[in-house]
Each structure stands twice: as structure tokens, then as C-alpha cells.
Image (cartoon, rainbow, N blue to C red; front, top):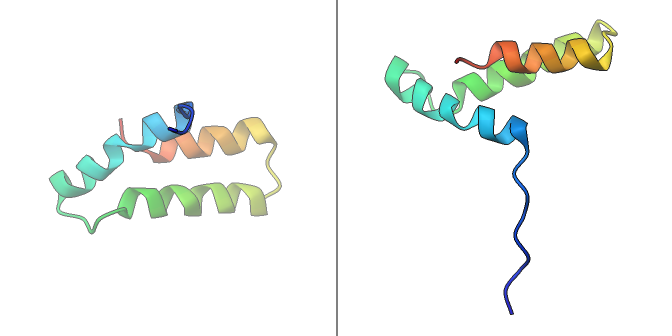
Length: 63
């Protein structure tokens, strides 16, 4: 028996190209993901509302 298909969240889809960006810029693997975690943690520490924390997440990922 196989597992049911898992839905893909937008955040996961947007984060996946960051791995290629790391390679292209010569950065260590998952560098951009670490930067994103730091941005969200700073937003949380600053007490920003959920919408602003989400914006910090998406802005910190390269396009």
C-alpha cells in the first residue's frame, strides 16, 4: 500500500530554487535557507504580526 500524496505548500515551492541559487553564487549549501530562518526569527523577536513575518520569509528568499 502506498502513502497518500502529500500536498506541497507554497513556502516549500518558493524555497526550493534557493538551493540552486546557493550553488550559482558559490555559497555553502542551504545558505539562503539559513538566512531566511534568521529573518523570520528576527521578525518574531521584534513582535511583528503574522503578515509581516510572512513577508520577511518571502523577501529573504532570492527570486
